[in-house]
Amino acid sequence: MTVDGAPTLWQTRRSQSAATALDTTLTERRYRVFVSLGSVAWQRFCLTGAGHSETLPPMADSSSFFQRWEPIFLSILRIVIGLLFLEHGTQKLFHFPPSDHPMPAGGGGLPPLMLMGAWLEFGGGLLLVLGLFTRLVGFILAGEMAVAYFMVHAPGSLFPIKNRGELAVALCFVFLYMAVAGGGSWSIDSLWRRGGTNNLERPSATK
Image (cartoon, rainbow, N blue to C red; front, side, top):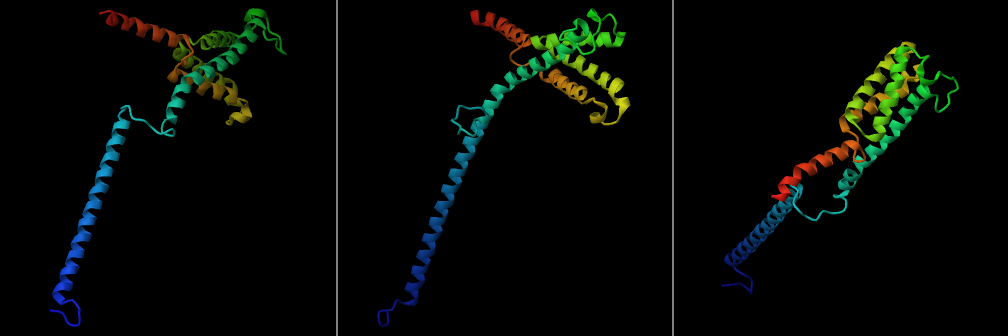
């Protein structure tokens, strides 16, 4: 029974319980949808990271651009450094390009240690330009630059900017980088590796 049309206490509590149950049901459904969406997103992330053929957004695919050009620019760096280093050898050995301080052709008037360095500059620079035995050549030339720095430049001062040894230090670490990274895609070393891989794959392809 109601008084003046007002609901009884039992009816009020019943309506409140129904409203609470409805809110709880809606909250549970939202939670399940949220968990389901999160699970799907995590699975897509795992599949994409594992190398599956998922379509990636343009920003996520930017790393492939740098990976594609990295070996090419490594080759450009190797060629440029090789040409610059080669000039030091040709100038000492063959007086080309002409120097302000002329030296005998063939390096006949050079001290033995400088003569050995000149042939390392000439032969090592040429091999770097070709990209042949890049890692071995880079390791040897890095050692040459280290010896040149500590024998010629370091006694003058502790700081490379004062003893004029910046170029020797820079070249030493560039050659060390090449000894680890190799010659890049534009090199004879790379051609040999691709040729060896093709030769290994041919017998299995003919079976």
